[in-house]
Each structure stands twice: as structure tokens, then as C-alpha cells.
Image 1 (cartoon, rainbow, N blue to C red):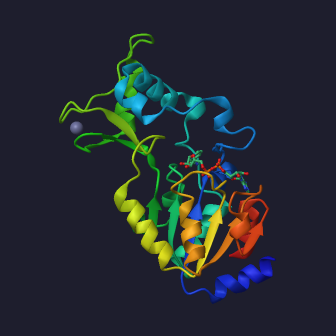
Image 2: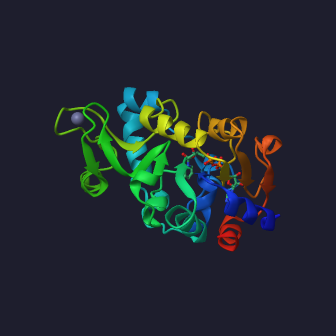
Length: 247
Ligand code: NAD
Ligand code: ZN
């Protein structure tokens, strides 16, 4: 199977790599839908709750700064590094990711080759004026307040609500990134979907668009996914070792 995939990778004119939480589990970041995934531990805070309730905002920042949920120390693994090689030295043009962990950037792929559908958790921004805030600054202010009377951070420029620069459930998708992802998908002849259960829409619509447009679709995931039925090849293996052997 991987011999055939090797051939497809060599022959492809333009590869798109699409990643989900599964590529980062080997870096120690839990995914959502595996049995030990985040989903089993806590319910996500909906965007509507975050904007309408100070209690939800404080809960959200408390979770973020709880050391158990801190993903800022994670390092790219073999899978990220293999993808960086395909982008930097091979025939892959973009990585479209659902991840928010900044590990594709950390693996050496330049920002303009990374399309983040769900934002990035390594910084924050004001929901109104979009002013960027670094987390260190927000964290030290937030954790210095006494438990029970914590207040969520407010924008110093406009008084707006500051939020981690991620797209929460219920929050509109980033328009520019969605357009970039669509045009990149329509330009590819090989689409590799790696480490995603392919259940979260609209992100999961990109492999479908690629396939309908005539590109080959290859899915690499340890478990079956929703889109196996339309794929040209499905590899149910661990991601790091599989990608390392391929590239
Ligand atoms: P998901 O949790 O729904 O699916 C991950 C898939 O990867 C699962 O099917 C699992 O079986 C597979 N997997 C996990 N580790 C693997 C490995 N080492 N080898 C092979 N397969 C492996 O993830 P999703 O489809 O990305 O959807 C979750 C949403 O949650 C995303 O939209 C993302 O924004 C967010 N999220 C991001 C992170 C992150 O940034 N690292 C982590 C958790 C959740
Ligand atoms: Zn502001």
C-alpha cells in the first residue's frame, strides 16, 4: 500500500495536506474523539456563551491556564517533520489544518503555506478591534487575581472582549482562510487527510471537494473515518511512523 502511495506522491503535481488533532497526539496533545480524548473530560465552551457570560469567559481562561491543559510546551513530532519536508522540498503546496497548536509553524513551515481553519491558541486577540495580545501578558494578570473573584481580560484599546485566537464551536469560520483552503483544494491532484475523524464541518468538506474535483484522496488515520467510503486509499496506521517511512 505504501509503495503505491509513494508512487502517487512522486507523480503528483500538487499535493495538499490536511491535518487534524491526530497528528499531534504523538506530541502529547490529546485529540477530541479518541476514548481518552478531551471530549471525554470536558465539554467545549460555545462561542455564544463566551460572549454573553462573564462566568463562561472566566471558566475558559481558567481552563486555558490550567497546567494540565497547557499545550505550549509541545514539540513537533516525526509526522509534522515529514510534512514540513514535503512542503519545503517536495511537491506539496499547503497544509490545511484544523489544529490550533502552532506545531506546523514550529516544524519549519512558513506561515504563508499554512491555512488554519480553526485559528491558533498560541496568542489572543480582541473580538472587536482584533488587536493582538500575547498570552504571557494575559496569563500573569489573570492568575494573580484571587480564585472566586477573577475577571476576564478586556481590550486596552477599545474595551472589547479578548479571546484566544481560536475558532470556538458556534463561532463563524474565518472567511479568508476558508477561501484560501477552497482554492488550494481545487488546485491539487492529491489530497492527504491525516489524523482527522472527518466529522467536523465545514472543515471535512475539503476532502470531499478535492475528490469531486478529480484529485486522489488518501486518508491516514488509526481508526475508520466518515469519508473512507469515498477515498482512493485508506491507511489505518500510526501517523508518525507512516509519514516518516513515506517521505
Ligand atoms: P478528532 O479528535 O475528531 O480525530 C482525531 C483522529 O485522529 C481520530 O480518529 C483518532 O483515531 C486519530 N488519531 C489520533 N492519534 C493518532 C495517531 N497517532 N495515528 C493515527 N491516528 C491517530 O480530531 P479532528 O478531526 O481534528 O477534530 C477535532 C477538532 O478539535 C478540530 O477541529 C481541532 O480544531 C480541535 N482540536 C485541536 C487539537 C490540536 O490543535 N492539536 C487538539 C484537539 C482538538
Ligand atoms: Zn479591542
